[in-house]
Each structure stands twice: as C-alpha cells, then as structure tokens.
Amino acid sequence: MSFVNELSCDGVIPTGPVSAWPKERHDEMISRSVPKKKMPGVGTMAKGLAQTAGQAVRFGKASAEVREERYRTCKACPLFDPDSKRCTDCGCFMEAKTWVGGDPDMLCPQKKWSR
Image 1 (spheres, rainbow, N blue to C red):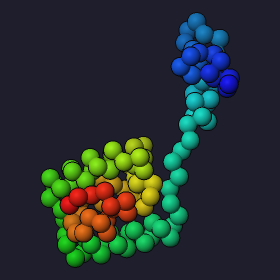
Image 2: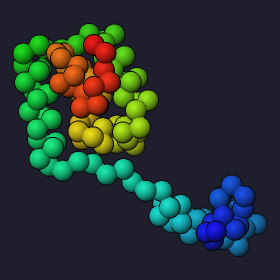
Image 3: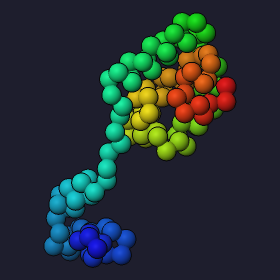
Image 4: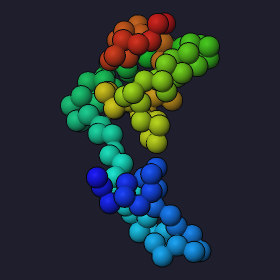
C-alpha cells in the first residue's frame, strides 16, 4: 500500500486552509505518480512526417467532416495524448494530421481511420 493511499481512500491528499499538508507537496506527489506518455523516436516521427507530407502533396486537404471524424477517433484511442494532442505511436500532432487527405491506412499507423 502506498503512502498516498493510506491517507485517503481515493488517493487524494487533503490540502487547504485546515490541512497540515502543503498544496505544493501534494502537487509534487501527484505529478510524480502520473506517468507521462512516451513519444516515439526521431526516426519513427521522420518516417511518419514523410508519409504524411507525401499524402498531403498527392491528395490535398480532407473535408471538415472527415477531419472531425478522424479527430474523434484519435481522441478515443488509448495512444492519444490529450495534453500535447499528439499520437504516441507516430508522434504526429493530430489536429494538423487529420486535415491531410489521402489513404487513411497510410496516415493512421493503427489503421483506425475509416476514411
């Protein structure tokens, strides 16, 4: 059992005007306990960027409807990092990549985009 879980049943350390636990210490403990999603290496990102650029040059821009559908799919994916709005598989910024037209299987490394 961790120290955080011993303090309260939901893992949150009480802070505030009546707490002896300083808020700064609470924030430090929480930030250490939440693992950051790791982005892929430079080589993987460069390969993805080259493929995406090729699709963009060849096919242009996707419609707003297709873009919204793709972005919804990305946000539901466990590989999507909501803080940076990037895919942890390919490293791409998904707000930009979803606008690229072309083959969805070449654009999404997980092949989750339907169009």
